[in-house]
Image 1 (tube, rainbow, N blue to C red):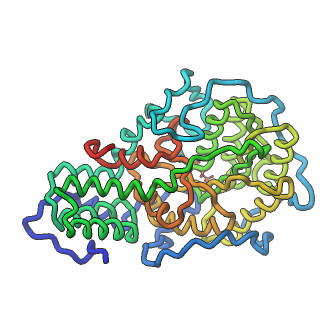
Image 2: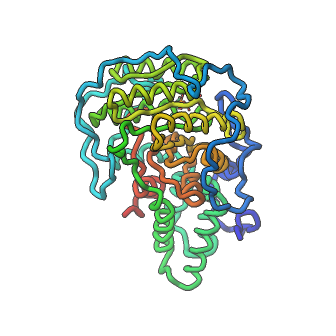
Image 3: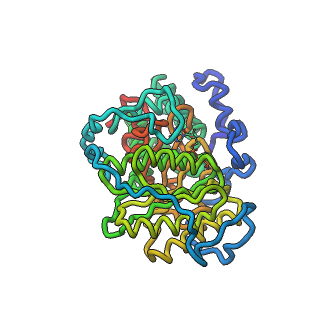
Length: 439
Ligand SMILES: Nc1nc2c(ncn2[C@@H]2O[C@H](COP(=O)(O)OP(=O)(O)OP(=O)(O)O)[C@@H](O)[C@H]2O)c(=O)[nH]1
């Protein structure tokens, strides 16, 4: 039973958290997103519901013609749309691949290719932030501002004693960082049991055990994306709620694949937000990556259908399809994802080969219900957790891993292309905890 709410600290107990940090433990304190149709806080999962085993994807929704609230173009189920723009030029050979794809190695990856990053062609907005170094480097620099790192920084440097107060502080820190009640209880009660059976010589030993517990939560989901070369093209469908960083992530992935010399095509399936189509097209033009687009308000399934046919005809290795951001609670829009998947399967019954859900790392426990709904609608096979830099709490990664076990393919730790990292459980955990505990 989590003691966060019932335990009262002794008067003499050292105060280690600011009121802001404690207040941050409560989801109501989260600032509202400035994005269109951003999820409301009252939709958040509070962690009260028992963790239900994830049902397999429910297959295609029965009625894909439900009102989505958007104008519709001709469906590809009756024929592919004609107004297609695609550049015929194949991507030019570029620099060697970064070392952290496809499989992470225990050894530090080689430095990034020595090429000047062309930020003028970057898909997202420009930023003055310096790029984080590649490989395992940069994680700590980017995550040190997170609620998780700040809470644990204070905790570890206060020279704690091995007692129940330390466990209370760990519990508070984990909840504050959005790890969620269930995962927090499991970890803290496990440590308490071991402490009572005198397994730990001192507080440092307990903290090392905590690091091991956190790692063991994440290790099973630290599974990098592998491009199956027998799939031509390998179709990657990106999904997620509004403003989580889908289009930006596609740009980062496209740069990664281009650097690996993989012939690539993009499908501008976010036909709701006009800027999203323009963003992909501009990026594609500058980087000689073909972009299939039909413009705003086109049927996204039609765009996906066209793109897959074009990619197949050209022998493209990877096709990345964007989709519009949608709230997981909007049934019509969730059904649209099922339609996109069905339409892709008309061209290639094995497509999409990866359904990559992008989750904003600052979302908190609401991320759990988002993933549950998207998985039911379209069968999520991999995750990208973005915005873990700056003020993100970061703990939701543990909650997602514990409840769903779906591979976390990438982590977004900044806005630069090289800030999309292959998810590395050890680099992530060690970036959140003080350096003295690192392996
Ligand atoms: N700090 C930070 N910002 C990020 C990261 N990933 C994306 N962003 C920013 O998040 C904002 C939204 O990104 P978009 O790519 O437009 O999000 P989207 O999901 O495509 O948005 P919709 O099309 O509206 O659903 C942009 O300002 C990005 O620069 C990240 O890892 N860290």
